[in-house]
Image (cartoon, rainbow, N blue to C red):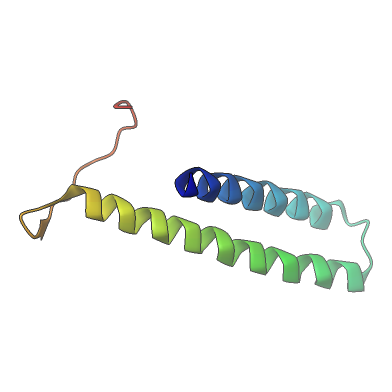
Length: 79
């Protein structure tokens, strides 16, 4: 269940980040609103980067074999 929650959190953070970018690009915000949106965007970006780093660590653990890390291409077709 925690794995599902992390994926949902990542998707929500990414969606919120995209919405913030759209708001910033609309140029309808005051300077203060733009700065606040930018700060929120930085925080969301960090959350997304952290979630991706955790996912990368999990993938590396899953493909570790005999104490040695193997690099394998991911094509997304094996589910």
